[in-house]
Amino acid sequence: MPAAVHWDDVEGARRTVGHLDGTWFDLGSAAGSREVGVQRIRVEPGAWSTPAHVEHGEEEIFYVLGGSGVSWQDPGPGEAATFEVGPGDCLVHVANGELHTLNAGPDGLDVLAFGERARGQGAWLARAGVSWVGVTWASVGEEPSPWDREAAAGAPELTAPSPRPATIVNADAVAAESRDGATVARSRRDLAAAAGSVRTGLKRVAVQPGKLGVAPHCHSAEEEIFVVLEGAGDLILGEEEHPVRAGHVVARPPATGVAHTFRAGLDGLTYLAYGTRVPNDVCFYPRSGKVYFQGVGVIGRIEQLDYWDGED
Image (cartoon, rainbow, N blue to C red; front, side):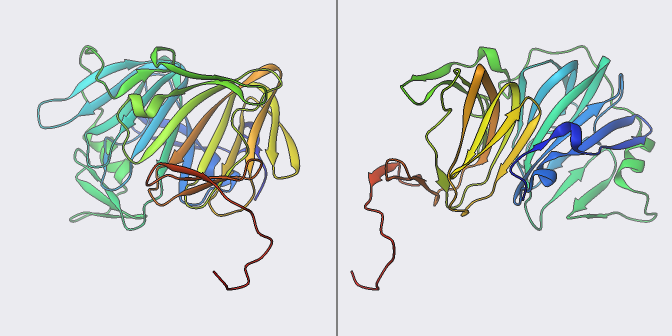
């Protein structure tokens, strides 16, 4: 898998069906992710991103890169509402939550969509009258695609924007947790937790010039995706270093045994860190020999052995 891929080098695919019109860039697959992914979606001015849907088994997190628009949400019949969104906003949609989609403003809407790749799961598209099941869909009668059915149903009604729910937060409004050490120096905002995520997380990390965002580490069960938003620096993978800048995407599948971190350049480095929350995950920090057992919240230090001879 590549150490990092730049989003300018990922080919996009435009989907235009009725009121749905956007260009999709599969950044996660390009970076080599496995069980999670991230798509960049550029929605055309006035258009909609996707059919209104609710995921059965996946949690979705959106981060607005640029432009403007509204989040259309419908938690139940007759309860549809819209909420204004803009740069730096984070939106969380938990599994089996509300119907949702995005409508771009006059300058378009540019978002990152992070999500799980849950096997055997699907999504219900109430307005389109179909359910997604894996890569297929279930319907009665004719077999147009869900996007064609959504287009035939017409665009959702746009009501005046309502006060935003707790599931939409702006990054700058989320409290920062800071660390200012000799090696690791950064501020970190837990966006997804602030917006009510359950299964996955998204943090925005701002690293001070020349410092690390976190001590080098590797996970046994959690998968992570990083997207560089501002500045430049280096991705550290084991003993290797790779230059990164704004637009680079990095995927770190679990159980690689290769520790990773970022070091900021002269102007600092800001990135998004997305990952799963797996209770049985073990995180290893090779420089200190520390091990974090996430499920029980215990950190310990171990003696690292070159081999195991089968004896206690």
